[in-house]
Image 1 (cartoon, one colour):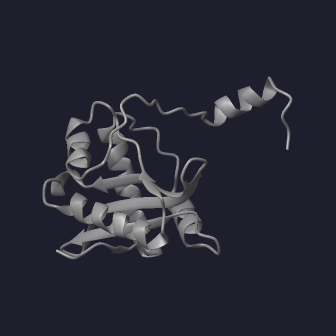
Image 2 (image 1 turned 30 degrees about the horizontal axis):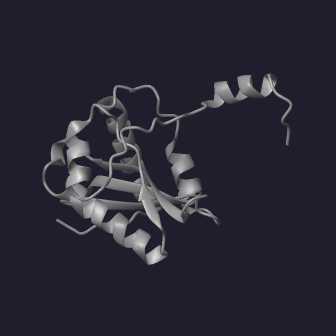
Length: 162
């Protein structure tokens, strides 16, 4: 087994497969709108929007972690872990730990003040995994989203314009 490495454009088809596998696991099989082309242009263009790490088993990408920088009004620069995914077939084989180790080392090298991410409240194996690594799972916070349709509806009913 290899150590995690920076993803390349050539990894994006498999990264997309892992994203789709996660969507099925999270009971949102039709929610993935991102495409391979979007991953390639957004991650590997002139101004990359994210950094992605992958880990291989037998020359096949079996896990990935996608991160990007954010800014906290309380802390300053933070790193957001959008997803850490290990294929169903490879769970329990230390790949998640290796990917999280890589993300934490990367965040430290950037000098960020915090690394943050979300976890579904019913995903107890993930919650336990993160807590065992020293993460604080803040169960009293709720994630708030406006999807594209909600953004459109919101803007129809307010005076804000750019």
